[in-house]
Amino acid sequence: MRYRCRDGGDYWKQRGYAGRGISVCPEWEAYRVFAAWAIANGYADALSIDRRDNDGDYEPGNCRWINNKVQTRNTRRTVWVEHGGARVSLAEAVEELGLEYHAVYNRHVRAGRAFADVIDEMQGGPPIIDTLNPKCRSAAC
Image (cartoon, rainbow, N blue to C red; front, side, top):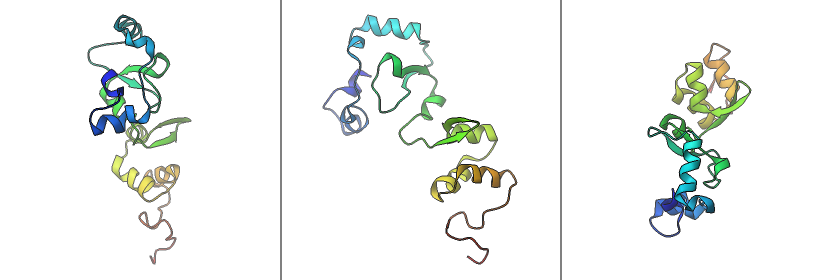
């Protein structure tokens, strides 16, 4: 965590952390303070630290201990959708709905269709004529 946020080093580190201005809060520079926070906030060997806001710093109000599955759904490239009255990752929504991720992704992200319309169609609603050409509105396309 501290290494990733220091200036210098490799290209990946600079693009991902230090180069974006992400830092570790000053109080966590003292290991005992960080360790006490970690234990009080659910640290376990099978978990890793995650920043809720990927543009935010490593600090108590922005960090949590989570498993790999949850962490991979909270990245800069995550597609967020409104589902069930909450903002969730596309992966989480399609898993809950029992749909195939890439089918939903292609219709929603690549074809630019509204998430609710894609879900409606995939669950038996009226089909959209051409999923790769959102300008097409007839069967003749």
